[in-house]
Length: 171
Image 1: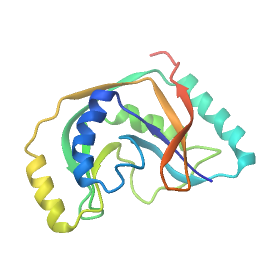
Image 2: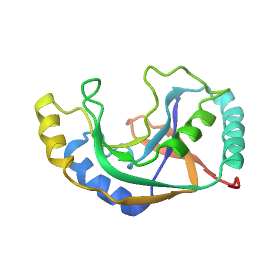
Image 3: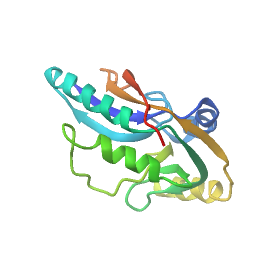
């Protein structure tokens, strides 16, 4: 089965993201707005308890933190994705690094860039048009990160929460 790990920002951030995702993300209905901490990976049922224990340890060691989205970015020309960018992605990157370790470590093709996708699978012309107008907008969206979620993919390709992990570490 396919699993992944993600942060879901608070509702006010999701509402803003969805206002764009409805128009620019064909996968809008498959998962709510999120920051991917661990991209999709295959896992056998018997491996699941070990992965859950690993994620519980990560949550116990990690203190809640605040994230702030301030502008729109893009991965073009590598990928035609438009996203909300973080002012400081370091806390999310540290959490990603803790999660992406044994027993679910894998090499990444690209450097990890924490972001919230608001548009994907766009043609080059559409990407340039949308990004050109959105990059002029200023965003001031803050969200507390006090949990992350282990997700699994259903047969219809949508994602649902398997288990949530509360961050319990101290600063």
